[in-house]
Structure formats: structure tokens, C-alpha cells
Image (tube, rainbow, N blue to C red; front, top):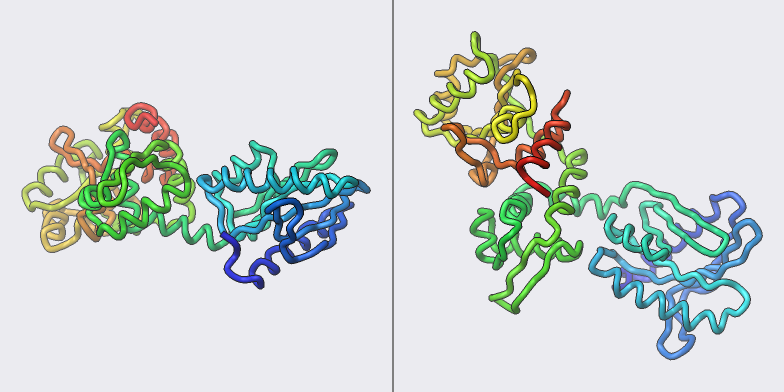
Length: 366
């Protein structure tokens, strides 16, 4: 798909030229804007005459709006076709096809680099492999891609990802997935469409009977982990309950919350220690709680008082039951799912990240 308008395409290619010209011993001039036919239906969207340390190249630009892993095969075919046919015409300079796009996902960049195919995106990332010249600049993703990724890994969309990861060995129809994730069919469909762009799903069937299967759970979980730094962490309500160590407190929370029928799920170190012991002791209990009158009464019965420092209980307010998806009851205590605990630990302090990797290896397995 071409950029939305010629203006967008021109701005992108001008930005690409500015990036090249800012490099030492690099001279770049635009050869032409409009697509031109060379041999058969071989076309490219712009041509750049490039000199690097006195060596000449002709860049054949293919412009796209956005490129994901599923698009790379077609891009490689297009650029290879352009290069083969254009090299006959440009018999003096090396013809180097190069993809210019508003956004290129990290996975797509990795595939393009593996095939030694050049690219440039609006965030300023550049990869240009040529005979006798090699340019590689890695910049943060452009805002359009970053915003899209953040929205995929937050809110109700995250519940769909959570479901796919917890049930990664199952095939799902769209309606079934929506029911398990506690979201609307439209939300489930949007997430599946996004994941297909990353080539993380396989599908079978057509129409209403179409089913998907998550073939790359590790890649999805890795991508979610990378996004955590860009997503605002949930706010904590910090409490101190006198005369209670974490293990005793955990048991007491289970009893009191059960009595008041409070929806909750223990997470962070206290939960990880139950799933896959790693630390000699845990100093604080953190849990997600469906806040309401029942939760307030339970917290009051625990004798918890609000503190800014020295808390041994931290409450993460859950706004809907969907935030407690796949909790597990272990020894009479409700624990957040191993996936949720892993992600929470990655945001923790001290040895939390080490504990996260231990949990992933021992309990999650991918």
C-alpha cells in the first residue's frame, strides 16, 4: 500500500534525503519523483543518486505506508524484481533497491536485515547494505507505530493477548476468543488483525468458521515486555498491617477476602514465590482487587492503615473482572496468572526481574 497522498510520500523521501546528507562523505540527490516503467511492469517510486566516499550508487525507492512481517515477502519480491530489471538499464552504478515507509515494525526490520535489504522509516532508522558501503542507524520507532503498539498491549485488548498466551496451544474462533477474554467480538477481531500483521498467528477455515492459533507465543510475550516501559504502571494503594510477616499476611488476606467475597488476585513476588520459589523471603504482598464496599470492609478488618513508606500490603485497583483473568487458586489463595505475574515482576525493583525470568522458565515455558 502506497502512502496516503503524494505529499506524504514526498515528505518521507525528503526526510530520507536529509538523513543521508547529514552523514559524513555522503552526497545524495533526487533523480526523479514519479514512478517510471523500465522493463515490463517493473516500477519504483523515486530514484536517488548516491555517493558514499566517492563510490556511486543508484537507490531505487519503493514507498509504503506501514510494513509488518507478513508484508516482507511481497516487499522482497517487488524489490528483487525492480533490481533485476533496472540493473540492465543502469549499467554504470550499482542499483540498490530500498524500502522507505512511514513505519516498519521491529520484526519486519529484522527480516529485511537478514535478507540484506535496505530500509528507512520516519523515525530516522536507516539500513543500507551495498558493495563497499554499509550504513546502519537504529532510532526509536515513529510515533504512529509506538501509539499503535501501546494501544495493543493495554486495556481490553491486553485481555485478548492474555487469553491467547494462556491458551497458546488452542485454536480459537473469534466469538469464542471474545467470550474467554471478556471483550466484545469487535475488540477480539481488531487484536487478531494486528497480530496477523506480525505473522504470529496461523489460521484455518473461512468466514464465521475461521480459527486462529498463536504460533509465536514467545515473540508476543517478548513484545509485551518491551512495551511495559511505555505504558503507565497502575497506581498502588499502600498499607501497613502491624505484626504480620508476608507469609502470615498472605494467609490472612485469603481468609478475610473470602469471607467478604472480594474478587482479588495476588501478584508480584508473593505470587511468583508460590508458583516457582526463588527468594528466601518476601517483604510485601501486592494484589489486584475489585474495589467496592466489600473490599473496603475487608481492608478495614485487616487493620490496614494507609502509609507512604514501609508498606507491607499494596493494592492495585482492578476496574473489571477481566483484569483478574486466569487467576489460579493455590493453597486457598487466589494468584494472578503466571503471565500477569511475569509482566508485573518486570516492572518491579530489586531482584524482581531475575524472579520474572525464573518464573518464565519454570512455569510459563516459552
